[in-house]
Image (cartoon, rainbow, N blue to C red; front, side):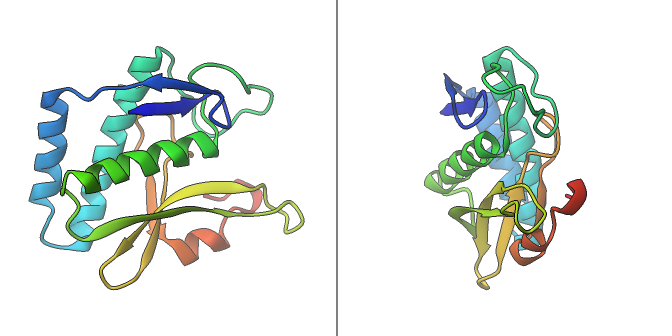
Length: 163
């Protein structure tokens, strides 16, 4: 993998998952293949592990959310970096055949300043029923559990720092 950081993907750093990490992630998802809900719960843990490995490779611990004025600092990630990295990881899981109930979709955004919200990006998955889900890892420091919620709920949020 090549992970983005430094805001707006200014820096890219190569990250490799160990065979042990891959087996752990595969087993997490295999145990959760009974339902889409179980798979989403397992994805939260898998994404957190991926972020732990990413921040270790970068050598800097990402802080939660974006800190204005901290652009171009190695290891710090805005929502653009986070959503690109999460999307790449989800597509990796799909390429390995480990996602049974979801497929990655195009990243999306909410907010536009004129509606009182900052623009904010998220990765997206879609379940077999057609429901789209936001997969947003920006609110927690690298290695924290991402929010996974119905995309339409995520699109309505974001006022005053609301998740």
